[in-house]
Length: 453
Image 1 (cartoon, rainbow, N blue to C red):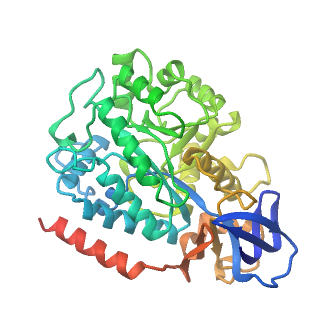
Image 2: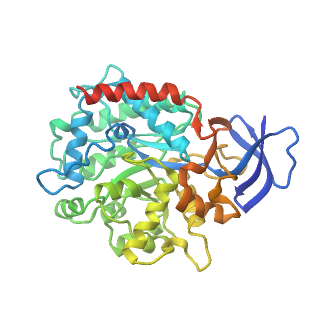
Image 3: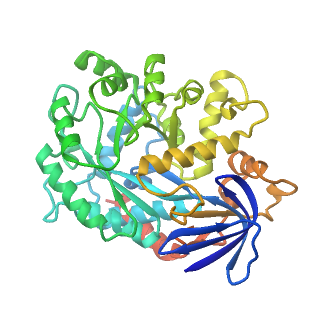
């Protein structure tokens, strides 16, 4: 048993002072507000439940900034994708592990304590499976263990290059699997994850353009329990192609053809109409929003203002890792709504409510649901994933309670993150990860080699 004492903490019932949290085997077993520090390790600051990152492609961290030069034609997601294909062509397992560890370290230093790795880089550079079909999954798991971040590993099923069962391209060779080959990969991934503390495994059909209705159904029915994540309606072109091939918009087709519910996370869901908004909100599924990446790629703006009042659930992710920061994803989500509406505090809900608090609470709940793990709250039975803000920082001077969260989300951001615990283990102290020097040096060598090849 380990005990921690916090001056302030955000508990399910609200803000509390002098909070003792007892932890056993990484899980919270008791929470006592108005307690004394006797026998407990005192950690100065403001304790928050760690925010889950529900959508990440870790390897893309190393290409951040490489697609910011305009090409001869109009740039879009589709031209960015070609840059990404060229970058990943030479990635080795060692590279993937080094890059993932660096990305996960940054997540921990900036307020994320768990990650959903939407993992589709499965094969060797020539497209052939590794001797161990789970080689790349094992490298992701190793990076998670090294950094201490909580992991939900989501092997991605990618069978086709476009709607209608179009064959995958040469550039996609490292992603592609038949349904049966994917299920073997999934079984191996579960073996790998079993050795990672408190890890979860789900499945991630890449998108409706990358599977057929038949192969999607086969995989979903065969995978058993666990989260199901899928990219949906990220781009207008995808919606147009879905209408042509399936007769329905992507989100509408999924809702009509599968029992989309709490196990599901529809990533992006940017281009959805009013009918889809209402049905998705009622389904209990999570909308996986990645506001910084969606802005970087020019995807569009998720209709959060319409989605949330209907009971819609959402979480946030860092996706392409163009920038990694928990508070910044929430800030960008609200700011996009403000720009579109030309209004302020759009997602706060009711008059007088804190926008930062509403966003943070919603992203905690939606992220925990999407990752299929007992996280996202400081209460017994949940993993002891805790982010502690620096109460002495000038940006928090004279503030308290929800005003702390508003300052964190909209003003100070990651510079407030002082201490981070995952499963009760301290992984970040004074804002710096315990293994930063080693991880950073390995990352620098990997990226230097990739840039100079």
